[in-house]
Image 1 (spheres, one colour):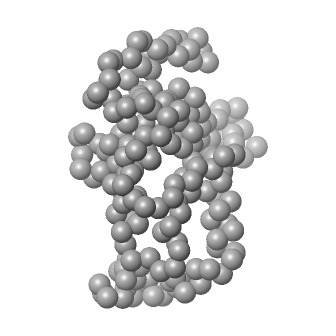
Image 2: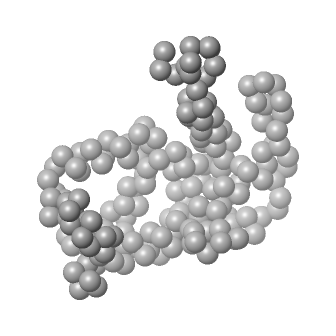
Length: 178
């Protein structure tokens, strides 16, 4: 079997990493939630214990609120991640042709956090309309990317491998900045 290594019944490292990654993702999506207002303005949450499959109890109180909070306000320890509202504003302020920046569809597992939509809309000062995928948020980004890639709408924005090797990542910058 491809998921076993050497036929000795042990799960391969890659398969085990995938299983752990999927478990952590499911854990994040089931226990994380956004506080209705910024964490700095609310009282600490009561302890919240989660029981792992092996029966071990883990206190997930900090994790359950701090992960979504970091998405909304950025990292307190690093300026490398300014937070989703700042990244959204920066992306939408770029000179984008047509109506591409008028509507933003938010998808993915983290978009499912309780109160995430309310907090993101409150923290975003853009005029773009934020939409949240109603169903199948975990996979809708892949579905949307597939539809967009097949539509031909972005044909003028493709870069060939040869162009990328000649110009590097600057190929994706507007012509005026090159």
